[in-house]
Length: 484
Image 1 (cartoon, rainbow, N blue to C red):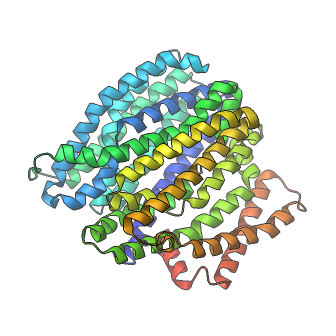
Image 2 (tube, rainbow, N blue to C red; image 1 turned 90 degrees about the horizontal axis):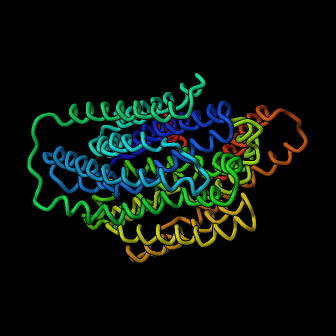
Image 3 (spheres, helix red, strand yellow; image 1 turned 180 degrees about the horizontal axis):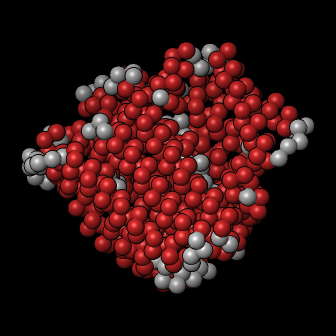
């Protein structure tokens, strides 16, 4: 991959995912202002159940596309993609049973769903087989098509969630409207597939299904555990605290996805190169590409993370109204997790065929989170579960770095550029201090404070990072290509 291709492809994917995230956030903004806290809590609980089932059902098959599209002959990729879709369709039928069970279990959490889980069963069948399509398009160098698929799907999802709410329709109509989203996503995915894979394809080697499952199941198990880890604190809050508190917690208990999307998008377009270097035993080139990506991502992710810590109250109040300002506390704790999201560590593990490490790290993450969340929610209330999640992520991060070091037989400095990372983080924190002090003097509305604090901080960081040589001319050129 050339130096110009990485920012171009990553920029396209980040742009599409950023738009997707903004659209999804916008739906939350609209719904929190229209629905009561009880209705919003019930709807987000239903969507959480659906997300949990989808996470369990795909078994890592969408992620296996990057690895196997480098292994199978180009003429066989069409059949490999079809095989993946068929497997996911079969899995969707089994996943429907889990949702059916949730329909009877949810009252024990204090949520009377009144059969609203049932339309989501059909939605699983419609959406699950389409999950690999963005990765397929990226793998065959159709990043723009993958971007448009993500953008259109998110816009449709936003419409079906918010339009019925704006028309004062009951939750039942909103949930059934999601089936329209599933049909449109399926139709667009089918169109893009047949457009890029016309005609017939060569047969796949025998045993390919088994080989794909052997590769993807460890990754899938890890993704199941990660998905549960993202939801477990919400299940615990739902069990221990009232529905209205759960609604507030949902608003604040998330890592703003735009920031980790930067690292994940860069890793997505790097995956073919990482796999190729590994298969050709080019460890030096592999690690050089890996560290280069961390450098580029750090100068963006770390200041954005510090900025969110700086404007947490204003951000939550402006987006979701002042009635949800208590959500700023869990939001700020969750934002601290973003400090290590300067790389998609599992992408490197998948590229070097260390998928078992991914599974073990996910087990460690979820186990630590559960063990810490229950006692901390009793001690700290709404701040307990996000604190547990933060500590669990730290434990898992240290384990992953240790395993990469051992697998590649290199030092920690080769795996992660701690010195450069510290310089960037230190600069980001120091430039935030005068803005924070100034904010205690300047009195303004929440919206105005959000705008001027963000602008002042980003300008101060850009000047300081450039003056200290952290951000160089080539980084600005990278950023400009990235943004274009």
